[in-house]
Image 1 (cartoon, helix red, strand yellow):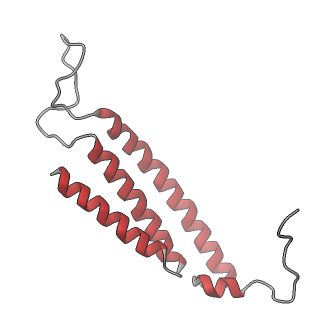
Image 2 (image 1 turned 135 degrees about the vertical axis):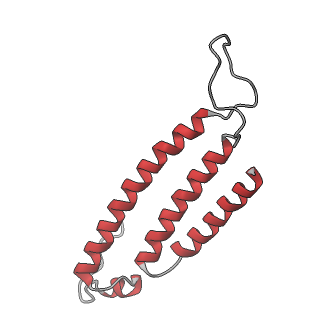
Image 3 (image 1 turned 180 degrees about the horizontal axis):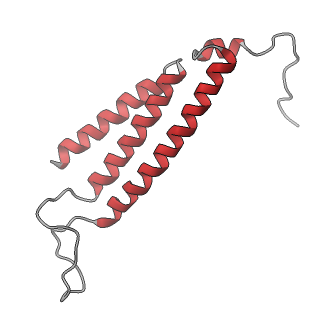
Length: 125
């Protein structure tokens, strides 16, 4: 099961990198969302996927048995989901605003929106 999840996480990373190398902003945004899902899946897989024993310590013991799932990666994944969703919402608003201003989602056409007759900004101090 963990091997399949690791393979699926690698597939998420491959597809997200392919999408982020695109010239269209919406594909870059979807690639960033898939990348965060791949990271979450990797963190979740690192905590051992077991269905037999929940990550609870019995009241008469100080440590859990070795076959329980690790609760820390699960907590990290829950936090990462919230962070990834807020980042996605921010990037979505940024993409929508740039599309409203420039009328395109192509990064090459966005580069052409820069003024040509203006001098280049200073490259150093």
